Every structure is written in structure tokens, then in C-alpha cells.
Image 1 (tube, rainbow over the protein chains, first blue to last red):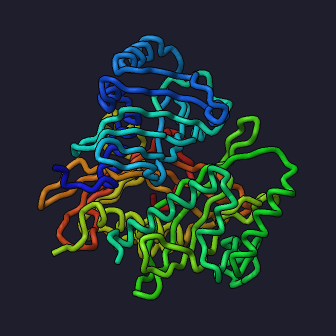
Image 2: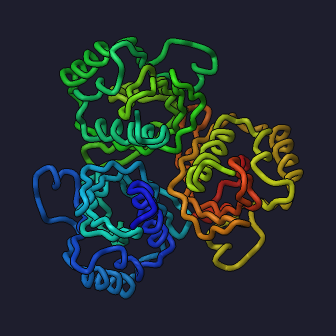
Image 3: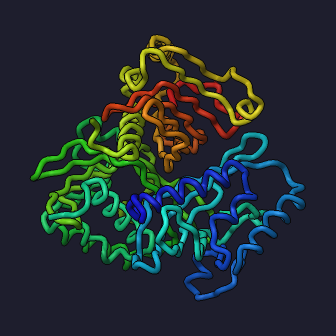
Length: 157
Length: 157
Length: 157
């Protein structure tokens, strides 16, 4: 049995997830997901229109590993780093079998020359199976507020 | 009796409030306030000078409904969306009758063409009557850090 | 004995610390540290290179008081204000003797003319001695993401 409240487990999950990405430890990123999982990145406009297709789409963890490998090998552009700041989670559903959470996020991008910009913001729509202290994602849909997403978007959100 | 701690209820309140606005469900926004309530938006400079007048001022919930109606009908400018990111609440007073909280906030504005900018930041100075799981605002004073607030400022903060 | 969880005490510490700075109550800032303490500000690049030297460096609380005095007297540039927004704390170590925490932060700077910019982001690497409800810093290392830190950087982070 978990000794932490659901709120605490969600906060811990988010804190660990964004630290992994912002530390550029991308090889560990797929471990935040179940083996059978959904991960997608889309825009609010596409999401409102009910379009399933997005900028990024994966339906199992191996595809996430592939994505990281591709990113590492294709990474010809200048070194960048990212800083995620998350807002307050809003639990939209909580049953013994499933927890659904919406969390606002903002990502700042820091270019090699020090240039620092607001890169993207939006919400995570997450589905977890509760039951253990360490949550894993069954599904994460990243809904970006802007339609003008940098085509270099490659880093996991 | 509430089964949630005061901190948890404040976090839930904030998460629900910003989700309402960022989803453009403005018609539900007045429901976060008591019928007799205060809502105002001002600048830090005006606040330091003790000026009561602000950019926006209301002293009951009907005025908030009126504001949303006006906003819906007068909305001739291009469609925008907003993303609120809140900081950590600081409880300045907590008695059985009243809870006062200060919470830093930041709002990002996303224009129709995708342009994404830091729109406004500042603090919420909130007063709640505690007692139930779902908090309602007796008073929210929004103190914006910048004196140069966009004159199109219309969305609730 | 503390009646608050460690998570709650860390959140309270952060909320109080950033409020002090953003309210420009800098004279109280050193009180967030133990008498014997470490405070430094450096860049992620220097930190990765193992360089101890940083932009700012202090190894006791008196040096922090001196820094505030210098800042007050040397403050010839235009009045600015700051707004800190913190992310989720990640506890990297927790024993009865020591607690180590990493927390992402973002600071917005508001110039006198109202110009509002993302000033700096990065992480706090904090060390606390637990034991009382009110935590104090044994050490805070501020690691800024960007190498291009404004040379006017003077406000505590």
C-alpha cells in the first residue's frame, strides 16, 4: 500500500520526469511510461478539432526509445537546454483503476549563446494506473497552446 | 468537516480557477466568488501608493457576470488564449473565520498566429472563508508587477 | 517535533524566501541561512566543468548581509522588481541529519518602464538541517541555465 497521498505521488512523478529531461538524461525518459502506452504531442487547435494526428505520436515504449536514439544521432543542431516549470495538477478522474490528471506546463529554452526564451506552454493530459508509490504513465497527451511549434521540436515534453 | 488540509484546498481552488479561465469557460468564473465579494486588478505601484482605484473593480458577483457578458459581446479582437502558471501560496492569516493567502502568478498569452509572450505577472491577495472543502473567494486583489498593462486586458486574472 | 511533513516545510520555506525577495525585503534575506552557510550563483556550464568559482560566492551569513548593504548603497541603476516562480522540489537526499533538495526556478524582471522579461532560470541545489518546522539553509547553490547572465545581476536568487 502506498503511504503517500495521490497528490504527493503525482507531484513526485512530475518532479522526477521534468528533472530527467532538463538534465538531458533522455535515455531514462521512456521508463516513465508503461510498456504499452500512448504518447503524443499536438496543438490545442488540432485537439479542439478532434484530430488525432499530432506532431509526435507513439503507442508503445519502444517507440519512445527509438525517438531518443534518433534524437541523439540526428542531433546536428546547436546544443540547447530546457527548463520545465509545471503548474498545479487538476485531477479529472480518480478510481482504484485509473487516475486522470491535467497539468499546465511551460518550457523555457536556453540556446548555446545564452539566449533564453519561452519555448512552449500547454497542458499534459495524463493517465496513470495507481497502486504503487511510483506512478507510470499509461498515456500522456501533450496539448501545446500555440500552433506555431518550432519544427525543431525534438526534445520530449 | 473538511478532510483536506487547508494547503490542499487552496491548491485545489487555484488549479480549478486557472483551468476555468485557460479553457475559456469564463461563464463559470464568477462561481469562484461569494455573492458579496471584492475583485480588483491594480498595479504594484498603485498598490504601494494606497490607491484603491485599479484597472478593474467589482464588489459583487453580478458585476463579474456583467464583465463576462461584456467581454463576450465586445470581443472583436483576434482570438487569444492564456496559460496561467502559479507559484507557491503563502498563507498570511488563518483563523476559523478567515484565511488570507498571497500567491504569485504568471500569465502567458498565445495569439492566434501562435505568438507566445509573457503577458503579466504579479500576486493574488486572496481572502477565503474556510469551512467547506470547496473554497470560495470573499476577495481577490490582483496586483500586477508591471505598470504597462495591455489596455486590451479583459480576461479575468 | 514537527507537525508538518518535510514536503510541506520545503514548500513553506520556498514560499517565504521568494516573497521576501520579491517584496524587496532584502535585509531579511540572510535570515534564511544558518550563520555558517554557503551561498553561490554559477552557470550550468561552470557547474558541469566542476568550477567552484561563480558569479557570486559567500561562506557565511555576514557576507550575505554585506552583499545586501552593498546592493542598497550601490543601487544607482533604475528601480526594478522581480517575480520568482518555482517548480516542484525534488528531494535528492533525506536523513535525520541532512536534507538535499533540487528545485527549478524562473525569475521574471520588471523594469521601471513596465518592460517585463524572463530574466533567468535554473535550479536551486539546497541543503537543509531538518529538525524544526522552520527550515534554514546550510547551503544554496544557484545554477543558472544560461551563460549570458546580466552583469547587473545583484538581486539574490
